[in-house]
Image 1 (cartoon, rainbow over the protein chains, first blue to last red):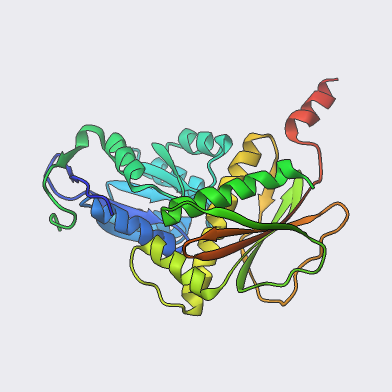
Image 2 (cartoon, rainbow over the protein chains, first blue to last red):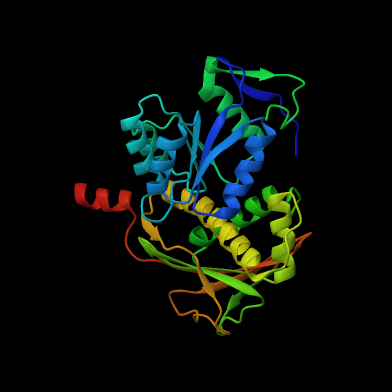
Length: 148
Length: 166
């Protein structure tokens, strides 16, 4: 996998903490591997929208990577509920279904960005940098996993 | 054959496999399925209902599925049933999701049912208005078969609106 400069939180230079939400174990593992290559830590995982809400409350991650089509509660509704409770939450929707209505609906509910599957690591990296803005810094020379 | 309905699935299959395996894929055999469908390995069946309706079967053998899973994960994945099934479902979701995006942006509205494991020796017949196209995507990991049967059900949204306005 491509090497990325580690993305750290500006405030304390600690790894960015992620909540990875996807009903596919396979997809969660894949995304987890990517964010770890960005120097991040996975603070929690969830396989549906309901679990995502409780996991968010428990872990208070810096970024949520949220699938859309999931059992019990879909990603857009879960994102809306999380953002209602935590207005500062940064939710990035990650889905293979990327038609305009879905994207607009997610953004209207407060999601910060959308990444289409199959996820390209370089795209996800840039989106995370954009969404974190000044709250993250890229630390050159820090290899994946050095920060953990 | 409703190529405007089928083409997005072919494009999505090609794009997803190329991106996943980081290689070029080739479209191998393409033919119309006039007989009952006989799976070649483990298959996922995805049903679509709405303005257009039909089904897509994604079919690959365990060795190919394990090779694709390994590429997806970046580490070796065994040819166990669960890993193979998970790979086929994930590939199905990626391909169908990408195709659906194209069709939805063209104005079609429909519901996609989650993939079901297709274990029967034969599938659904093609019919006069639901022709099945069977195609093979050749990849370095092996062959991936797609069986696509799709037809129009109702007018798409923009056409319905123009009829109402008229």
